[in-house]
Image (cartoon, rainbow, N blue to C red; front, side, top):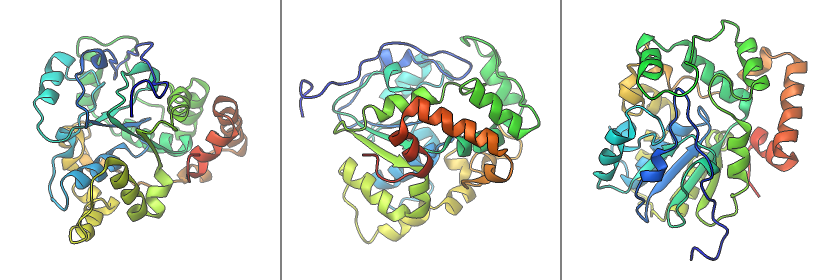
Length: 303
């Protein structure tokens, strides 16, 4: 593969808010074997980080995945602290981002894995994350120097209202949703990009893990496989959540298990009015087109 063969994405803008500082990518020095896990938040990021960790360190229990796989564009700690820490890593690095393609530096030799999830499921998981956050979380995001834009505030009590605000204001109070999905969808055919879907991980974890292994060129030892599957199961991750959640779950008074909550899809069906669901579907068609909108809602092969 050569850089002239494909029309590689170029970074064309920066994103700043209470969580994100995308300028860190300008100073990040890639290695050819780097892995970048890209998602919109609460789409299965931590699960995919666990999977990649098991492929790189087969059947090893107790991996400190949150430390091994940092969220690069999270503005805390600042890039002056984070970049030397990432540079010092000696294992094959697997980084996390929540940015759209055009807000990060894209490396042709690196591998990119994108995981998607229906936006309604995303918000149900995000609401749990937000509603259970403690004062330490708000202080870290709002009071640490470098925040651009308004602070993030406590959520409304009604999850349906929370979803409608998120939909009408495109990702409020987090960051835009549709552009994240759309920009990655547009590069899905690149040879160093793999698309996954949360629903497919739920329905056939073994198959999806083998797809990731093939993409990353990490052979699977059959003697390790049962333990690898066990350590990537949702039940195991929930029981050992402090290993894969930032600061061991210190941002939530109920602990790390709040971060890895239910992992269920469709919880919104009994709450959202039909009209609101229709509004979401209509918006998905407009923002993404029919093929991408179908994939985001159902999973399956991203053609």
